[in-house]
Image 1 (spheres, rainbow, N blue to C red):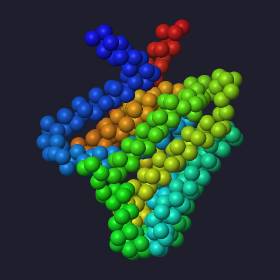
Image 2 (tube, helix red, strand yellow):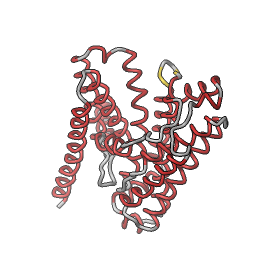
Image 3 (cartoon, rainbow, N blue to C red):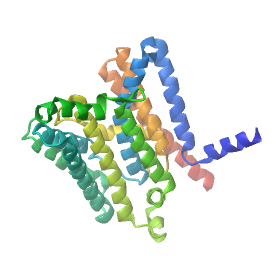
Image 4 (spheres, rainbow, N blue to C red):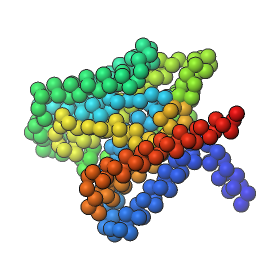
Length: 335
């Protein structure tokens, strides 16, 4: 019993774990409440669809979460999602191999990540301004990819067999009874979680978010670390674009609208501080679950879209407020 209590104390002592656990508890309670209102929410089919739909929020939450931990923000995520969807779908609709299209889309998105890292980490531009600029540029590339129009169906270029294979891999297919979209997001989440918790890069990301000047004095290369963070964000956004292309079977120039804010919401709901230096990506997982459950539950019970946005907005603002109040209380206690 004493060993169990000691393990509990060790887990809850991990910085940010408390907020993440609160996020998971909130997710479970929210799901049960909606289920009591509308029992169809408890059906296996709805649960599977919820996990699949949650995949995109999990990925943008992971990407934005890493950036928030550095004390920065990435406004380009939604446009990078669109760029990935349009580049990959345009190439496939013209008969280019799916593998080549996927690699090309990811590489182009990573270029945006490098540019963000350069602007913020090397040239010291405010992250809001730097990524606002790349947001417009990436969206412009998405529009130009297919001549300012949405793409034709992927199967029109690849053929039905190859087109269906792409769509099944990224969205419609299942592994162990769960949709592939969720598995893709979950594997990337685990990989980034490992980076953040077990590697030097992760420690450096937390360090520059806590105190960038102290991190410099400790030998942390702020430019390199910031660029790595933005590369993670860009990669996650690129995969979301591929998932959306697989879902629609084509590229949509308006894909990814507001996804940068969805990422912020998933992060802060799960306890990742927008002020930098604290929070666990485990919280982003919980935040993505809360976000998707709210969207799913409010939709099933017939709540108007306006009400859905207001509820989610209040929760996000409340999560940030709690973080600010907690930090102020911690500072006063230290003094």
